[in-house]
Picture 1 (cartoon, rainbow over the protein chains, first blue to last red):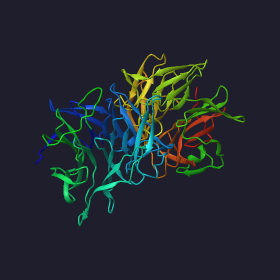
Picture 2 (picture 1 turned 90 degrees about the vertical axis):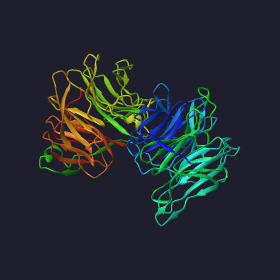
Picture 3 (picture 1 turned 120 degrees about the vertical axis):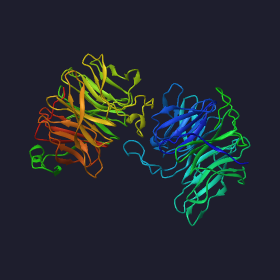
Picture 4 (picture 1 turned 135 degrees about the vertical axis):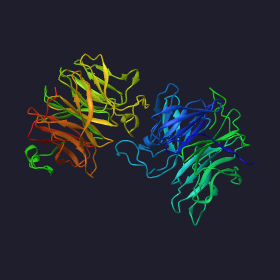
Length: 310
Length: 298
């Protein structure tokens, strides 16, 4: 079916990034502006949800309703509390500061899976803590008794992890390995999550190509729908088939592909009352919506709201 | 021996190349907050990332003075000799009382939590001025407990002598850092790390600041930024910058640079004649001698 992309907010300065549906509104990051904004479909209003976020990108709600964000410029995943304060989770992996977290997915146990790529942009403050020698998917885990977060390294074969998503049964972690530089690797991967808390060898579900105009832009952001398909933002006008939102089956078949009326879609999430609309952020700093997209978001069982979605 | 970059002949009168550069402490994660205590002849400084206030006595050595320090940053004394602290991660200005207890002097402005106090100076009327950059909210490795910035400006605050009022005296800085008065206290210098400049603000009788004047733009390609800043008794300004310490005349012209072999963060006058310059860097504390004494600390 054809999708109609309707611009509902923006443009803002710099790209818009991560999104999270809060039950009645769509939160989305205006990364460069250092703000999280909220689009409310009932009124059509865009309001400021949080400011001074220091390049926070990926956003997600935990099962109990807590909001987390990837604060790229401070190299940490932070918790945006309901009272307006914010607090860091763990930021050390084996005693060293990790890189600049980009995207996250939170499982039903509240564990936060996040991509931790290197960035060309400087993080805040004195440059006294070197980046890690690897760029991996990491996982934050809360020791609920001691209220302490710790970080575990999950991938050992990535160099440019960007988007992360979980299958609805949480047996598979999808990772977009996205290096858009010449001859960089751009793949959609599926890693089985093993009972011993590690990841098995990955299957490559899709590889992005290149042509005489250059590399085809890989996946920047993605989410899964209620059937377990992967909805991914990729492509650009510069080369290949152009900017697209693609739907991959869990096995990697492209079952839908939609050309978008703007360059470089960044990330996407389902929203609206039926979770039947897809919202897409853009490199141009906008928020678009596709109503009745024919797919539905995953409803997360949360204590506070049954309608929050990733 | 000091490595000097002489820009004008006047520099030679202030700093001599044969002055020593002694490393009196090393092994810090992020040295800052240098302060000479004239009452007991000791030198204090902080390690922000290491969460400690250190104390050193010439001829005796160093000890831990306060740990944990809630990532204390700038230090000074008030006129009664009580230690006043720019509480970086505590997001407050706090004072150590004679019995060792701690009093919070400032933490909120107009009902909102301030950013993260960076450096601090006490004026002769007992008022306290401090810069309120947001580094503890954003900088890697220096995190406060609550990371949310509530104020929409990063400025300079004044605590009234009776402690009853907190006023924003400067609100047009981006990342205010070092601050110091001229010897006659008629002008407040504030440097801005983000803009790489030193500004001069004329003081008004009520302790507020007049409009900004650009005093000096820092130059240089070496590592180093506008951070700590102090003034000598002739009104020359010593400011950290690319390559080390930039010495600037009261007319705003660069006289020369003292090269420091590590990323320099701040400096303080010290020793009984106030002619020693104690210098903090990321990892170390250095001491050298200069020819014109500095403005004493209470």
